[in-house]
Image (cartoon, rainbow, N blue to C red; front, top):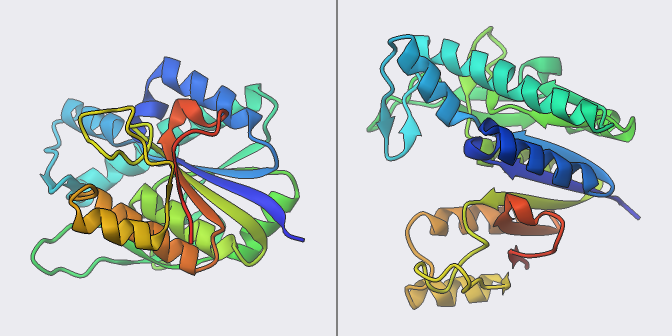
Length: 257
């Protein structure tokens, strides 16, 4: 029987504010079994880039990562944010190890090809070293993963944290019984965007298709759920979309086969 592994992805706002970070680390520390934390950090990167006089450019909510911006996100994601989380977990008795994809060659990517938009130094994941991650986890080490990868040619690449969480969960599903949790600004997937209490407790693929046809699920939630079902097809046992403050009380939307 496989050991349980929980992969939790949290957004930048949660890990960048002292109060919400403290609450998150308390909740994360109480999660039983093996676990991994994947974090963002975009708000801090935007703030520090502005302080340094570096223009922040976004297209459809995605950051354009030129050479100067890459320096900022590497410093912020791999340094300031990551090490603050690691230090906080160590103070709670969690033996955490901060990682970018370049560390131990854990995640290798390729620079995203230019199509309609040149996103710059942005990576699309090619390979996750599941063997090495498994060894770390089985030694009771808790990886804390920044949204950075590398191309194996000496270049760091800015990489979406949601994607890192999904690819890591998929890669480890052969060794563990994996639950992937996306911490979200809402309580889960909602039937009514104006009603925060209208959480759909469970969604299967037929449910998903029906909700799309009825217009209940639309916009940016569609690719999120498509990625979730792809992860399920690749061996992840369960995916949960919930609030960061709800890690310990079984709330949110469960995505199941």
